[in-house]
Length: 362
Ligand SMILES: Nc1nc2c(ncn2[C@@H]2O[C@H](COP(=O)(O)OP(=O)(O)OP(=O)(O)O)[C@@H](O)[C@H]2O)c(=O)[nH]1
Ligand SMILES: [Mg+2]
Image 1 (spheres, helix red, strand yellow):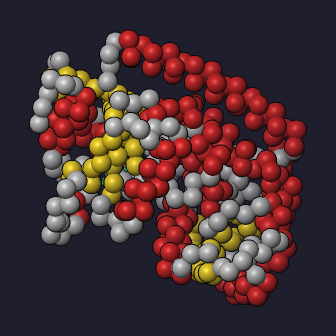
Image 2 (cartoon, helix red, strand yellow; image 1 turned 90 degrees about the vertical axis):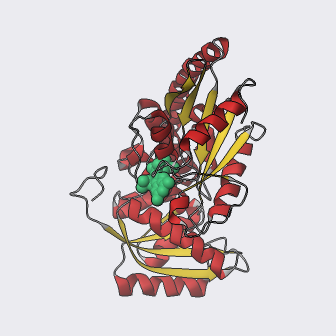
């Protein structure tokens, strides 16, 4: 049982829907990731529905025949939740709920729900709440109607926790208030960064897809004990540790929140303060779970986010992690490690240091 969630809470049972202009295989791959997100949020997946789209139905996202199929499936399986893998508008949520007679949420709402249960620091919590409220704002009437009908549950935890809070003015005021609080924290971070630059402190940011092994690597390189887990989005708060090659060559290593495909764009706005740690680093250590069949897609997603936050031009060291899980790994000319089994980590430390300091060569 996920200790972050209330154990008294009834486990929700859901049907997942993947509908996109992509091929059936790509939709299914994305649905299997959605399924992983669902189980992270303690949701039982009863069935999945796949529809390669030719056109969007503006009212219900999927076509009317598929809506009927979904409604039947909901009834047959006795599901209480439907999760779409694509972003839905407020009116699509409302129309779909009317048609299928169950609560409807989308991938972003699920991701934000997981974020809400993971954030531990004050800054992390503020940023998650701001992202949620920004996401809810344009969908407010549909979401408050849904709340009135079905009550809370996954997708609603952490943001507007009561029907009363799902009020236009309250949401707007909260967004304003949170933005101000985050701005203050950002100023503190800026100050700390200036101090680091003054002291000529080198900073290395570990970035990558969620579950790549970033926190495990931070722990292994700095011999510390940051929470690492086989769950999506185990880390939502930045942690910084010092790593020393010798007393002259040291750097700060920053762990960051993991990236995922189809991350809501509100995330980047709200997490700006945290992501700036990566955007202002001297080196990006891009960690990849090489044992995941989707690893190339993961690299692409991470690079897209890095570009969006203005970190696209920072020197980057790509490392393939979890090579211990691959039988007969063939050298692909990329630095390979196992953070968990501590393979190649001294070499990695030396490589990083050589990229940061001119007087170290490898
Ligand atoms: N087999 C194997 N497992 C690893 C390796 N590195 C990390 N893991 C496992 O992968 C899972 C995820 O590791 P984390 O360090 O939490 O990953 P993360 O990138 O910080 O994930 P988020 O914070 O959720 O984005 C954990 O169960 C780790 O034990 C490795 O080299 N080999
Ligand atoms: Mg982590």
